[in-house]
Length: 122
Image (tube, rainbow, N blue to C red; front, side, top):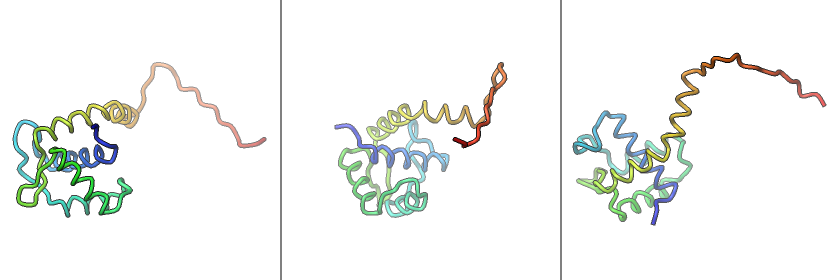
């Protein structure tokens, strides 16, 4: 059964959180880990995920049941299967992030941009 959208979002968020700490995820074991409570607090505080804490706990439990994450001394860690799934999610969203980055860098064209200014008159 494929991952749900919220599960993908949680998996990706955890991967980005660990990556922001400059921890390698694929070739070496993750050295710095976080607890479930701290991770959920960060997700709620980000206001990107519109889920309540209980729903986030359930999503993490589902990821654990699917053997994508494990808890080692109450710290979240990716399993090899979880890392593969994270790679799939990242490949899925890469075109979206690439186009966002392209436009944020500034669009340069050989042609001049044509702009039309209109008023909201009837």
